[in-house]
Amino acid sequence: MFASCADPKSLEGLAWLMCYLASGKHLLFYLSFGTVLLLLAITAPVALLFGFGGAMASRSRIAPIRWFGRIYTSMVRGVPDIIFFLFVPIALDQAFEWLRSRIYCDPTVPVRHGNEFIVCSAAKLPLSTSPEWVHQAYGIFLAVIAFAVVFGAFAANVLYGAMNAVPRAQLETAEAYGMSPGQVNRRILIPQMWTYALPGLANLWMILIKATPLLFVLGVEDIVYWARELGAAKTRVYAYPHPDWRLYYFLGILVFYLLMTWGSERIFDRIRARLSRGQATAAGEAMRKAAT
Amino acid sequence: MNECLQTIQNYGLRAIGIGERLLPRGEFTLCEQFTLIGSGLIWNVYFAALALFIGFFLANLLAVARASHSRLIRKPAEWFIFIFRGSPLFIQFFLAYEMLVKLPRAGIDVFGITVETSWMTRAWAGALLVLVLNTAAYSAEIFYGALRNLPKGELEAADAYGMTGWTRYRRVVWPTAMRLAWPAYTNEAIFLFHATTLVFFSGFPAYQQRGDALYYASYFADKTFNPFIAYPIVAVYFVLLTVCLIGLFGIVNRRLNRHLPGATKKIRYRPNLIR
Image (cartoon, helix red, strand yellow):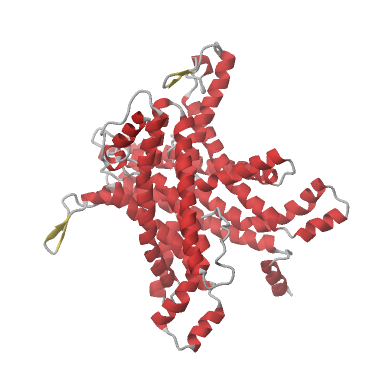
């Protein structure tokens, strides 16, 4: 990285530490914090979308869609989320490869041979010839889907509750004005439900933040992976030998997460105040009184 | 059928080291998968039951400390709750393992008596410690919320009877706080039970492949490349045990509310999905 770091064996003290923290592996470690943030940035809207679909399906007038919505929203209740995190990526991966094998390979050859799941090399996902970053990106893509499915179910619960919390009279008034069900949803229900949904969604965001280390279980090279790699004891053959420092790396990660949750809490307090403005709730009433 | 009974005999207690040492190989029958995953469930129940039991007392102490007027007592409790609620359990497991490994191998000398420390790095003790502290922090927040929401009238009534200090806490404050906190606490118990699946995916190694339900399930899924059997089996087990847990907490809830009109009827459990 720097010219002075060319020969780490000759360095000592602070200069050694500076060079150590600026080594190539460490830059990958810092980038992996970006992976976590990226996962959060992609998963949160996708999960919200899934949740919105689930909540709408649960309110549907068509029975099969309603059943599907109810099952989807209640499945996260009894089953630990990590089971979904382990199950969904493998299941999706196999589903994709099976579909591709039906197209690109000889469709008469079964993919399951006893305990093996084999597709021809043309149907492999990603192709064995693809570069390393494609494999990483595919892993993250599967992880995002798994997170979105689980957190979508959580969000569906929150949104379903919020939709039911909107006062009936508001919807009935809209109907009395001759609005169609779609118009009632768009103009009255959805704008009003957010204030009821916010406490739940804020909580959900906290849980999502705290679920991101599970990326490690899914085989993505995330912060936990790098903390274990870099922290493990390094012998003389390495440029920067050091004893087992994993404890300090994990302490650093702990501080990162504490800052994330603490910062989110501050932001949600502001949004909460903003959304309560002009609402027919206790918080909104308190704001009105304070203003006059 | 007989074959299956034999399998249950061999592997039913495999997770705690009784029975056949080697895990089955080659073709896995449905029975083998059900038995081994069920045997792993012993660990989940062990972790959940003990962590909830010990954590409950610790959480009560923490909640009272957090509601204390003295800064010296309140601040440590607030920090403890903030750290354990603000960081992922997964990281807490890793961190705790690394810390416990750092304990001196030979044991610590306390007034001439050597205290063994190697057992702390085992999952049954180390992971349990983390789970206890974690659930204590979450429950303390719930109990603290209940303490703040105590009806004013009940406290005034206690004062009118001349109750103070411990008597007031034991006879008025605590029972009411528990009654208010119980639905949320039930929710926390379910979350903790589900969190026990993380133990063997974090730092703590599964000694001699004695893992929990999910450990065996992922073993089968890895070996057979077939996630569609092992994972649904764990899911079914967990749904059943979660229903039992809700039932158990429902009984306590009914007892806490027995003086209220209409409480003897079955209380409709409204699940709150968020921890």
